[in-house]
Length: 203
Image (cartoon, rainbow, N blue to C red; front, side, top):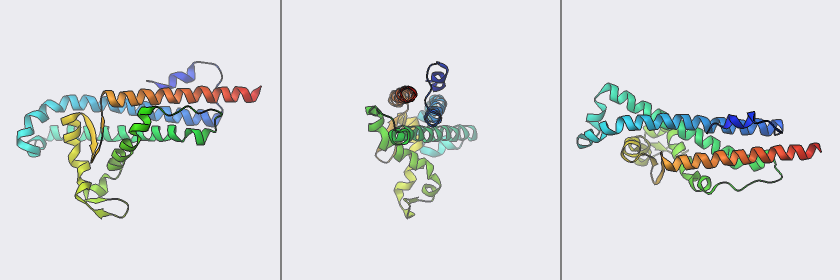
């Protein structure tokens, strides 16, 4: 999924602003992919241990310091994956306005369908400090729902291999892979269109 391969293919390059914009989006997408692979590896490692400890609820799982450390690392990787993926998606969604292209392809259906869930889950991680104190929303309203961001990491990632927050969820396997591939192909289309626009302007 390495996006930087496209800038080594020769031919006409996009104008500087489009070049910087699309390479940045691609870098974020590539970063999300690397982080996703790390997340999956940690889920694979911890799931059998989690399954053994289900009968004892959370305490038995977290009493072991090395396991606890690996669990928190898994949550960190999952958090940074969703943040980087969200930023790449937002850049793709804003590309038509930012790049002012003559032609803009439709966003992939998977990107449109997952946009709200990715943003909601991203927000739950991004504002984890407020949620740790039971606060949710810009007004700092106290809510039990705020704690779901913390409590659902174990249930979602280890129990179901999904990011989960309230009624939003995204699978860490085929679902997000399909999303990333669709997003990568969309960025590639934007690159080609921006390059052709520049070529037309120089004729």
